[in-house]
Image (cartoon, rainbow, N blue to C red):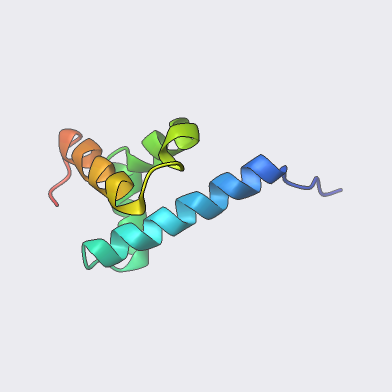
Length: 77
């Protein structure tokens, strides 16, 4: 029996997917590469934990924040 996702969960998933796409476009990455980079260097974890604040920010600010987070965790971009 399948359990429906809550509205909040659907919103988080949609937002995180949107940011992965914007991050990929902004840094000229393929979408799968953007996902792997953000996952490897803590960006996705940061987004998930800080969703309540980050989804109120501009996509540019969020991508720049993710860039800093990832660089602080060993990312090369």
